[in-house]
Structures are given as structure tokens and as C-alpha cells.
Image (cartoon, rainbow, N blue to C red; front, side, top):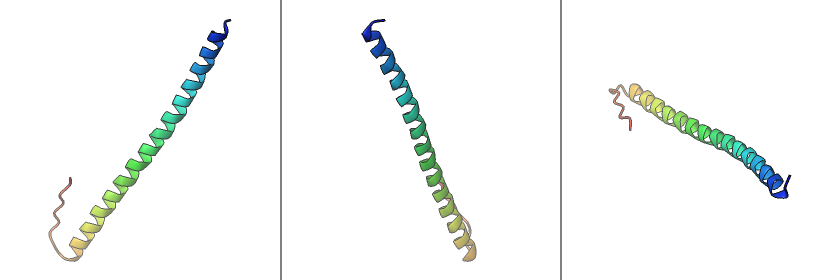
Length: 64
């Protein structure tokens, strides 16, 4: 087996491994960011509803 073939196979294996690790990490970071943002928005809407109900106002949600 030629040296260039060994190096190419090693490089391909390492590249695939790095791609899998980076992809998994990126997935979890994006999922966590979206979950945190969604939770924050739901919390804000819930607090607004509670305040309007406490003030005996009509509820009007404008989702954007």
C-alpha cells in the first residue's frame, strides 16, 4: 500500500470523526438555544396574562 493511500485513509477517518463530533455539538447548542428562547417567550406571555387578569382587563395576545 502506498504511503499516499495510508495518509488519505487516515485523513478521511479523522475528518469523518471530527464532522460527527462537531455536528452533534452544534445540534445540542442550537436545540438548547431554541428551548431557552421558547421558555422565555412562554414565561413572558404567562406573566402578561397574569397581570392582565389581575387588573381585570381583557386578554389580547398579539403573537409575532
